[in-house]
Image (cartoon, rainbow, N blue to C red; front, top):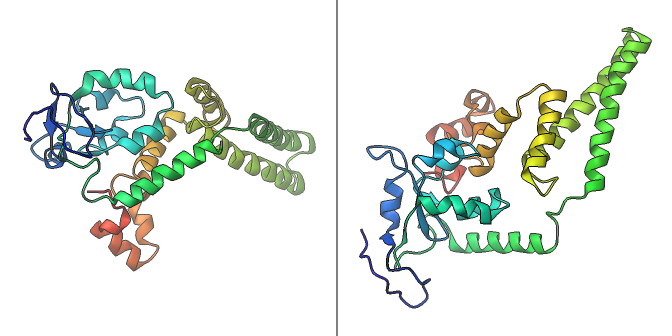
Length: 266
């Protein structure tokens, strides 16, 4: 373990004397696998023990566990709108911070790539591209409700002969596809400012209108965005029998778990 000292070197962030200091090697060893079942992660150079908290994590235990032994700063920023509220829960999980001689990012990550990503995100936020257009989303909601109703009314009024059935099927299919994308935006909390309103309308759309559980979709989709294209961590890639059928090169790459799938998967 690195020496516990409050001194800092030039170019590093100031650290508190009472917090324990850790190296990246120590943090990587607490990834929830092997002999140590503890799960540590880093957010803004602070080290947190989420071993017990992961089971109660609102976004799902696997999402936070996928970052065990790693830096989760960018994921934390992306997944949490109300960071002030979330940081209150983090206080009880804080166990230390990175030692002054440790970089703010892992050795397997490119500093220039991280800096470019954070600069791009900051630019997008300043441009207001993440602010929702309520008129647009209202019209999306209205048009798939109308199409869904039209599909059933067509069959009910004209009967189940070929033409009415075909027209009703077209209306119903378009409505279902649009519902899927709309609940996707709600699942990302991209429509309303308050997450609870997004969750409530998502339940109406996917549970009531589509007949699928929102909790199931969120559980899988949160993992996908936490570790996109990481084999064994991204559920979208865990359908490996289907991937193997797409060709030998992809099958070999996926089965071998090569780093090219995702630079942060280890």
